[in-house]
Image 1 (cartoon, one colour):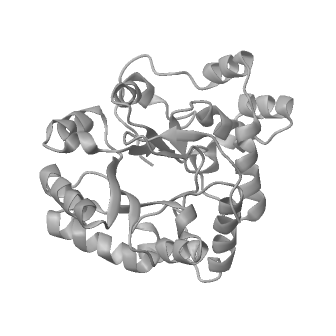
Image 2 (cartoon, rainbow, N blue to C red; image 1 turned 90 degrees about the vertical axis):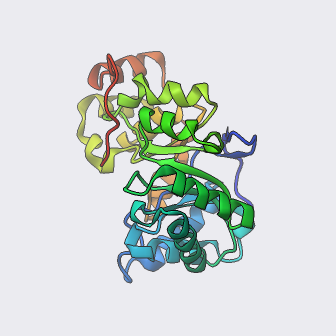
Length: 282
């Protein structure tokens, strides 16, 4: 089944990918949940959420096995993202980790391969591994995750560093620090952010202002929190859902248009940063 059309975000290469995707953090950790997780991802594909993000870390590779089952027979529809752990991110380690992920995912290529966060190996080593994988056709693009402005400047100064396609970071109403530094830097480079944990693992949902805005829109607080991130058209967003009703709820967040009054109220409850802050992690 071909997914419905969603808003698209442009990668530095010019390729367009869905703005709203699907995350898999904490998937693949339970055999009992496996079938439900597969069904949720497949429904997301049906609804046009064909960007799927996973990682070798998630469920110790279990999430990649969930993704394998979900995309079976539908690989050509999917923009597939996975990540290498920092302890594996030497040149040889990056290549070996990618090969293991490809095997678990049951595919011959990963569309976007990310360094999960910075570790002891030098960035030059990781970059050389990424380039070797790209040249071999094992990945199409490479990028990073959890990199702050100084990390991005260091990366971009390396030979080949400008080829970084995206930076996946924590961003939601409670975690707005990147608005004062990282986000404008990436925008100046035409490099899209991929936002994870847009509802802060559910911790946002008790906020009274968020709930009041949700009531006005006939929506859930989670949908408003997601719509707030999605209002930025150059940002990919990857919420996780393991139930079909939750997948449909996430998709429907794209149909919500926040008013200036909504945004002002949310700014009052969740103030934007007044100056640079270190990048936050969960």
